[in-house]
Image 1: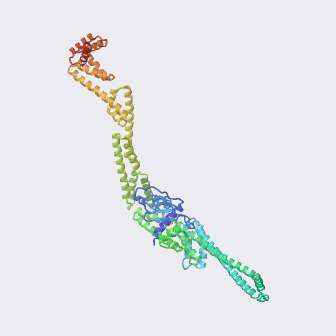
Image 2: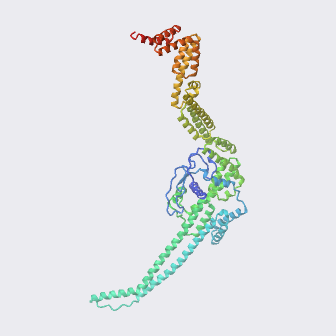
Length: 631
């Protein structure tokens, strides 16, 4: 018999009803053994998460005592489907609050709790097979209001009493209808008898001669009409009696069927609410009241298929009775297993067994009377496990790593492999993305930098290295922005010398800005030209060639007159090569005044002072063309 699967399905669905909530379809969680933490839905594994599969709506079955969809459990995927929603059987958050409330609650061993269970056991004993006499049934019925007065009963015994009373009233009505049918049957027979007597004693008129056909036909019609009028009162009454008998039979059948359906609906509801002691009380009352042997549950096709496919049995009152007994036995074994595992310090398995037993038999005395000191030991493990689940869900792997260590010390049977694998994998992938982000920052690849930081953040938002690298990148960004501001200011001032002196900072800052890169490249190329001419002049000055050194600086000065350092060197060399400089400038001034002869004489004089002078050679060449154009 496939009883465990059916009980799991109905218990899971009933828990949703009793909690007054519908499970959410959660995203899949990282696999972690802590998801096997003792929630009422048993152990967890990953993969399924809270949402499990896709939502699958079920068709509404008209006339079903279960209302809409029945709970469906797929053992291959461990997915519950209920009222168009699907969720994983191991989603412990569905029962977390209710289970923790139970773990913190005191054991129900007070005099009131004991008195309630004594009444329940007395009712079950009165209704037990072999004891169910009229006196015992009446005694059990009188105990129901007493049990219903206890808070833990939630007035369910009163509901059973109401159903029993309604069934008895329906049966009383059926008895009265049967008595009425007997009276009507007697009247029907008397009416038929009177009709026969009336027909037999009817005096007929003398028939006319057969030769007169017209008179014979008229006589026959008159006699038939006389007979019909004589019999009409009896035939009419007989029809009325037969119609009343048929109507009473229909009322009797309908009244009994309504009482059965109402009682069966209550039994199914009690089973879904996991009130298995009340299920036993109800099924025993049902058999005692309805003695026709018809115990088939009037349920819709979905519920009928659920019974047939999960238990291999048709949906009957006897099926509910046997399953309730089996659940009570299973819960008793679960509690015994919990206590044994607790003594072995195997808290994970102990918590799982208690969670399973609580899910199925929350209201059974074996669960309610469990000492709070024992439950509290499991509670600590449950809270840590739930905290681990939350840490994994929000991807706080630092906290999750700490919790795995604590749980492994607390429970000897805690399996760290799945959680550790999930944590280490996430850390490695996050670090890999951070390494790529670091390389992208160095190379100035802004798009890759942003993408890799985003990936690393999504995988492990609280990664300490992420904070460090982000801080470094942000500080670099601040430095970069300041460098760009300084570069723009120096460019506007044409202070190329300062840009050249701090060129490495500006090169790094402009790496991701092509327009600034071009401006900086032009400036650096210009400065390299200036520096080259200055170095050349310095070497010439060291050799005593001050005129040549001045001339080298002067050529560069004509192109870049704004460089301060170049101007300073130019001034020094002008003093050291004063005669040559004065001669060249005099020649240039006379040339501008168009005094060709005098200017040519001064250029020749300058060439005599410094034979390698390019200024003097160019001036002589220009003036010679003016004097002798043909040559």
